[in-house]
Image (cartoon, rainbow, N blue to C red; front, side):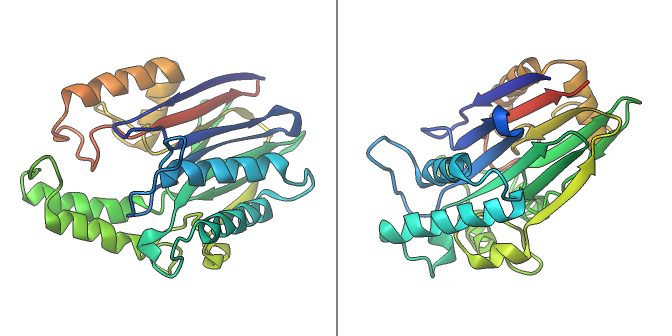
Length: 274
């Protein structure tokens, strides 16, 4: 088994992503922390999103080897809820909740177990060249609605900030967390159990697995999602990500690829099985 890995800080003060590598357990994954609307920063300088990601990582590191990933994720969700309560966060205000998206796998002899939330993605690449999106990005459609409104404003910023109407939509999207018609996120809400997705993938014919946070995406002239993944595979994970960072630096107004941040945190694992 060969592994390519990368994690790169985006435009914020700290990297809110985390990589999961418990090789002895066959468990690998990525976590994308999401800060609450509060400006919490701990003594180490970590934002609430980074603390959320760290809390989830620590819980998973100590979880029962026999626990399935779905229930391990729910345990991490409870641990995050306990952390917020201990620090006095009002968990009844959805916008205040700390959270994270994730994609997590356990590689077995014959099967690959997976679980996912939010906009982290898992792709399976087969020996015949086929690429399969195993997971679904439940955040994208809500982000796109915000981007469409901002586009009509010609991507204007006011004193370096997104316009009020755009920020208001982003805040309203927070209220869709773990709701029907919304998206899944690890944020301490027990309702995650009804929105978390998981499954079992046969290992037969799988050449490699790609796990990424939403900071890694297609920035070239790609016909579709699979074309982007193919471009990444034809390069290397590190090289592709470095080129993406340079693209974002040059596209500082977010016009060539409309997005809400010039540069988000970027983390990924490319695991070669055969």
